Image 1 (cartoon, rainbow, N blue to C red):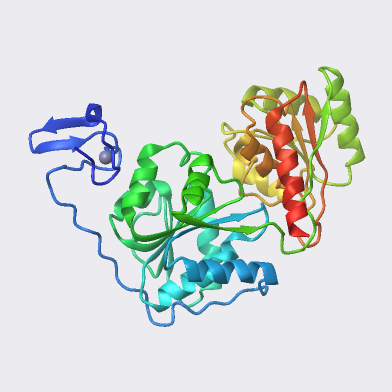
Image 2: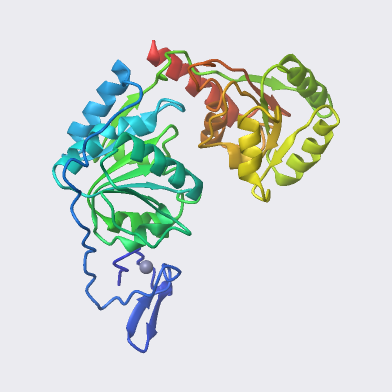
Length: 381
Ligand SMILES: [Zn+2]
């Protein structure tokens, strides 16, 4: 037996109800009977001229090359765009979306996190001004069809075999990564090709590239052309590391500083300590007014933030300087460290930034991260 929606084959998850066998692995979406034929969801074709696009800034020659190559290759096989943090991933998909809409194909842009869906919907609506770009996520599920659909991976179960192109942004991010149900549901929502976007592809994606079932396009340079900030690693035992941190904060007092810590408890403890020095926002998964805090930090009203990995992706703070405190902690894996370092130097006005990893002991993940970023810079030259 195999669930037609989440592709589960584990017999432990199949139950027999009064109407027949059903899958309990994906039951949180809705009950699905295995013996009933699943009908593909039919969506209306995109409107005429919905493919017309308008970019605020022209693509750089490197972006253009990757975007064109992706738009061409995607008709023949799945594509992975491996672009460094801050390389402008969304823009790289514009040509592929354009070509698909022009041919009357259905395109979906799926992301793991809800907050990013709403931001991306607005951005894509600006890029494709004639298209009806809809956001589908928790709290926004009344309208399910548009010329271009932006949704969380949690909503893909509504679109059985509906899409010709599924763009999956950051498939290595929580909660999509290692989630068999979400991955199965995304497979069965697409009858056509997959386009993956990430700065930190996981082993599974790289395996598909190695096997030749997927083509990988790399972009190692940010649009402003400056190299990626490479972290400086310093091993300093506690409590001396606190002094080093304070000295680093003082040296960067003219810029917003973001300190990553491994646990919520440490974020609260260190955040409170830093408040003795200057106002400090504390952002963790438990923070109720997260959006307000991030906005205040982005606008420079708070100059200091202490956060857990909830801040590692999807945020751009102009001129931010990054410190990872206890960077040797097991919650900080290589991909996460690359993403955290990737918060620095993202904007044209502030293309550079300082990244410091403070460690208690040697950490292979931190060393690999440093090496990877240095190599990406070498490739970009
Ligand atoms: Zn299932």
